[in-house]
Image 1 (tube, rainbow, N blue to C red):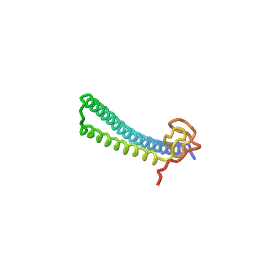
Image 2: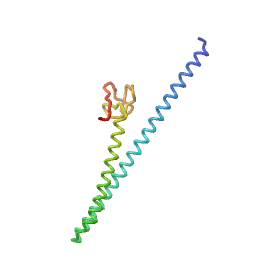
Image 3: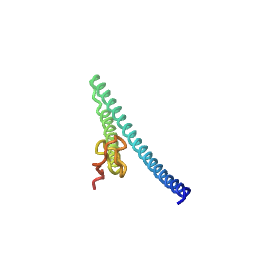
Image 4: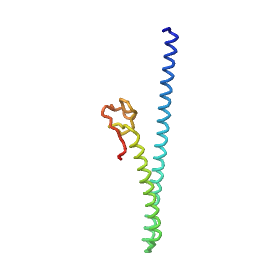
Length: 137
């Protein structure tokens, strides 16, 4: 085999490996964007719950100071809080489902690990005792 053939084969192998690495990077980027969007949605709902509870506390305090009862206003805010808590629960469950379907995870930090990886890309721990997280059926 001539040096040119060896160089051609090496270049082809390098190109194929580069394409594989680019695809993994693209996939990981999409995954991170999805996780970030989910976390932002959870944070937004948690902030709304805090605002509503603060609003509820202020209303109850004001009503107490005036020695009045306005259960309709209090009930309305409580219903809004319950709806937000339900939404939060659904978002958190969706995040857990996505995590559970993602494949192997690091036994140390629970980060998703690539198939065949020897070390965690998040914490660097050896993955010799890797566990597979799969949803229960």
